[in-house]
Length: 146
Image (cartoon, rainbow, N blue to C red; front, side, top):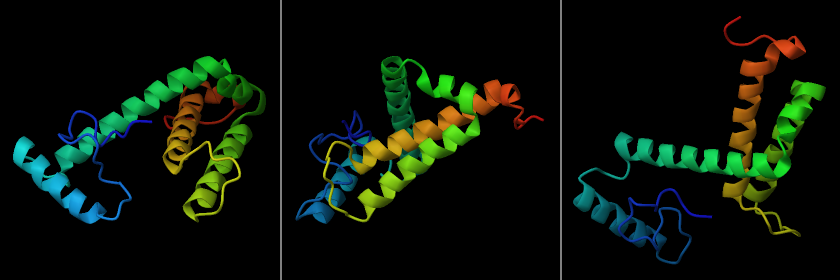
């Protein structure tokens, strides 16, 4: 999975701000200085943060589209049947997965990184918001506007 912090904005695509290497601090400082010199904006600037946020949101949207196609819109179908209880369960499962990964616990199945888990968690939160906004009345739940 590509890193949104390195796409198009990083002149040294093999480097990332989150790389765990022996010399990560030196690499990151060099990257920050180079980025600031080439693009005229510090890596920790609001402009840079907004750009990275947009790329993460683009990645979320792409992931949502692919998974929703693969799963046949199962989140919506299950929401219609079960309401917010289903959303709580899916969000809770992903949060528990994040907790386990962030504690450094050994994984028997190593198929999902912390980043993958966080993207899934964010998409579940967005999908829950969408269901409440678009279909909340079906379940007798109130939306923000009510």
